[in-house]
Structure formats: C-alpha cells, structure tokens
Image 1 (tube, helix red, strand yellow):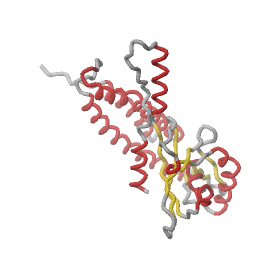
Image 2 (cartoon, one colour):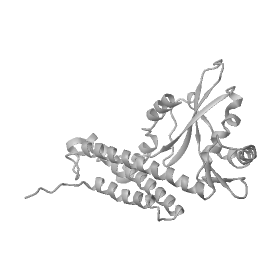
Image 3 (tube, one colour):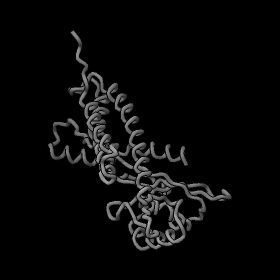
Image 4 (cartoon, one colour):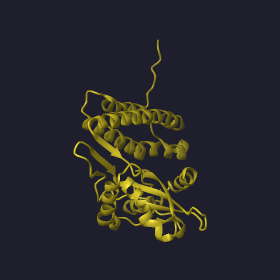
Length: 272
C-alpha cells in the first residue's frame, strides 16, 4: 500500500499562484491580460508573506507552545517555500522580459531614466516640479535618531549620495514613491509611431540631483525597495488587560516594529 504524500496547505497555495503565473506565460492571452496576471501573482505573493509566512515564523518562535496544523515542521515548510518562490520569481522575470519584447513589436517601450531623449528629459523635469516634488519628503537616514517606520505595501527609493572628489562623506537617504497619489506609469512625449512609458520611481531617480544637490553631492545611485509587513498582531496574555486594550497594545507594537531596517541598510551598503 502506497503512503500518501502530505502536501501542506501553504505549498498547495503556492501551486495555485503558479497557475496564475501560467496564465501570464500563455502567449494566446492578450498582452494587457498577461500583464494583469503578473500583477495578480505579485499581489497574491505579497499577501502570502504578510499572513502565511508570518504565521510560520511565529510558530518557530513559539515552538511547542504553538497548537496549529504545521507545528511539527514550520522551519522545513519555510525552506521549501523559499525554494519554490525563488523559482517562481525566475519564471516571473522570464515572462516579464518576454512581454517587454512583445510590447516593443507593438511600438510600446517601457524606458528607464537612462534611456530618455532630450525632449523626454525636459518633460520629466517639468512633471517632477509640477506634480511630484510637493508629494515627496526625502529622509536623510544619518540625521535621525531611530530608523523610521516604513509603510506597509509602499515603494521607496533607497539612495546613496556621494561626491566624486570624496571631499564630504557619503550619506544614505530614503524617498517614498507617492504611488497612492500619482499614477505609477507616465506616458512620455514620443513620435507618432511609438509610445514610451516610464515608471514614477524612474522619474524620481532621474531627478535625484534636483532633490539632493544642495547638500553638495554630485553622484547619486539608488535601488527600489518594497516593504511588506507581517499582518499578524501580537496579543499579550496579561489577564488583567481587557481585549480592547490588548488589541490596542498589539497595534501600537506593530507600528513600532521594523524588521526591515537592518536588511535595508545592509542591502543598500552592499549593492550601491
């Protein structure tokens, strides 16, 4: 008699999300819908990490005190999740690059801050001054006592500022990309036969000298980061505390927690 292989629900869920990725890979699906499927896949994965991966990590912390369905192997499940997600991300990148090639055939070009002609550069500077500048507040990391609380589901530019002659020490800064107030995709001036589109974060990246040059820096580099926080709330077991007070305390602790800070600083200093 064959033994049944147990497939944990978190691994099964990743298989479901892979089915969404397969729809994005299907060349018979219109390009717009393929891009939409990539967005659904990405949003699903964010929520998976916010809830399910967060739960598994808590189970490891709680050890045998945890009374849930994966109490015997949360660490093994997390390791398997990591392997699957890495492979799915490789497939995501392959599909996205394929879609970009297909878009080019349709005269639609997604460009970055290094691929702009003079007319597009002038347009971007005007757009930045008129629409973006008032919606961003650059944050110099070294000038604050504690690392800031980064907003969940938000995109940031992690910037390194330096001077070519090294006359002043390099510094690091964060710029929140205002995707909730401005469109993520901006249409650029183009010839009639072509359509050029740029991401909001690449406009900000192009305009970093306008933001930080008054500090005396002349060399700028940046990387995009996205914050995904645990969706769980810590509730203490103090019997003298009411449920409402426990929830309130848990929410306050959530706001204070920032598990991303060391990862961000290490990644920024390593890659810039």
